[in-house]
Amino acid sequence: MNTPNDKRKRRSHGPREEKEFEEYMLQLDRVTRVVKGGRRMRFRATVIIGDRAGRVGIGLGKGADVQIAARKAASDAKKNLITVPIVNDTIPHAAKLKYKAARVLIIPAAPGTGLIAGSAVRKMLELAGVKNVLSKSFGTTNRVVLGQAMLRILSELKLTEAAKKFTAELKRQKDDEKKKRQAAQKGSEKVGRRRSPRKDDAKKEPSDLKVAAKKVEKEKGRLEQEIEQKA
Image: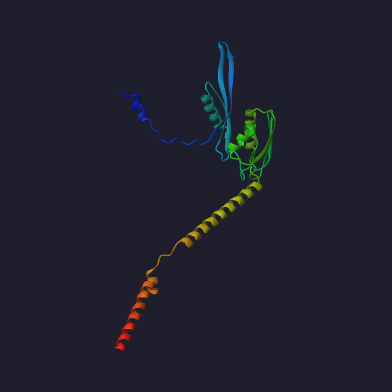
């Protein structure tokens, strides 16, 4: 008969699989529906997912439990995934959009500016992988509507010819810097490496000890000759 301890031993505690997307709960609402028998309470979750490398999505999900609603929302967000073109950590061009009661404006910014945005606009850009942008939202402050508006405005972004040239030039500069670093590293390794003495060098250039021994032998022979002459 299997005991509870045996079941615990059989469980594997291997490494957990890394999630492909990062999830963020944008909003969680409790929804009450009135029926003949009374009130039925459910939860509605709004989840944003992204890989911080150009892909982002938003979805809604309802369930009797918070976890169920969040799981459904994440599954719905995967169906609404879009790819955002990113140029030098910012968007390729300015864009504006009116969706329902929300009006959103986003403008590319220079490196080091950061995300000048708030609410759902900031989270959508952050999970998409955009690091520098200027934005302004007008009208409603509903985070769900703002998130859906951002999904539409980001899907309309396209790489312009100037952005393509800039990306190619930036990539070429990075490749050149990488090659220079590798060449400098190889040069420093050659300078720091000591050349091992060869056999030919040892034959051509005798060591200091051998030279000193020869000098002692010559001096000894000279002294012996002088003694013999005096005798």
